[in-house]
Image (cartoon, rainbow, N blue to C red):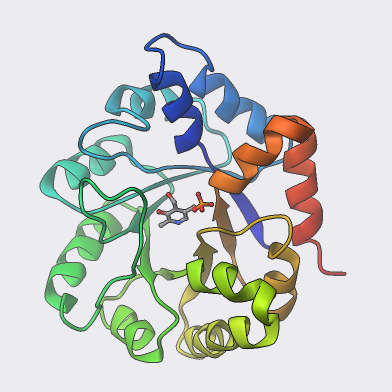
Length: 239
Ligand code: PXP
């Protein structure tokens, strides 16, 4: 079954709005695991407007499932990841001031750079994943970096879902089939939610992991965190 990794950045954003420790990011991470999430994702940004370096230090010994740190592999990011040795690092080409990730890597143009970064993390026994658009050439380019996995950027799927889910998912099925054929592990994320998640994993059941933040945290306002994690896990069931 596809694993659910909860991205807790939004929890940190809420906490940072007041400067205290409410909500408690570490407690929420541990509770997400207790409620059934199989992973926790954080996306530190240089200005620490979401999770902070201190959060990562505190979270590392608490996370008993899979800890995934995602971000742009600047020298500072690489040092942070190598220091805390998460289970997985996801490389994302986002600018420091970007609201959220909005494109995958050009894995051909940045091949040498990515190869070097992937090598550094793999030498430290950290699984690597490269964020890519659903584009065969980019998937093939990712393979050439020796990464363990790719993460498909699902924003376009989510945006087009209500206009025609068959067309919306078509490029993702093609990219996912190709990734499987060439031996890449497969993650997916961005704008996945309770409406579009099940259709995605039913059509691509070999996805290893989805990472979900924004919609899950928003749903928790209505349903509560425990229920919401259960609801997402239910959507991941395909039989
Ligand atoms: N994957 C990556 C690489 C991301 O940057 C994000 C957002 O931080 C997500 C997944 C999760 O997206 P969302 O918050 O829309 O669920």
